[in-house]
Image (cartoon, rainbow, N blue to C red):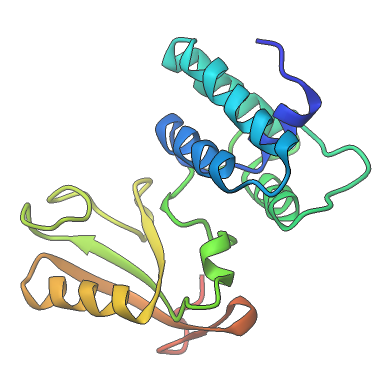
Length: 190
């Protein structure tokens, strides 16, 4: 598939852990893009990815993550975050060091949102949970780990799910302006 420079740049900034989440992020980016050329690039990439088989589309996403470099250096927050993710996730030979996590990336834009106050890590314990699948291990050394950055309201809802026995919050950190994290207990940093 041939991608324009704007399309590559747009795809490079997406952090989803699967094809559907990347496409969902691109659709959202198209909706809220401040410049028409960004909107057109996001819409075009979505059309191209949807026109291909899923495995091939995901291959394109992974190729961009491994090999694309922003010409002239990263200029936007999204590009700087994508560059940091790329350095953290890939070795020198372009092999992935570990699977992409589910949920929010440690450098996700949600972390820096004005109303974000909490970062949590949790396990799903019940099929009644609205988040994840019963028995799907979340975090630690499991490849299906999950991290979420939440508002006060979102955190209260998740605490309610924990009280019902649907989830178990394993780690918590307060999020301060600028995305600074303060973990509840020493030694929780990872």
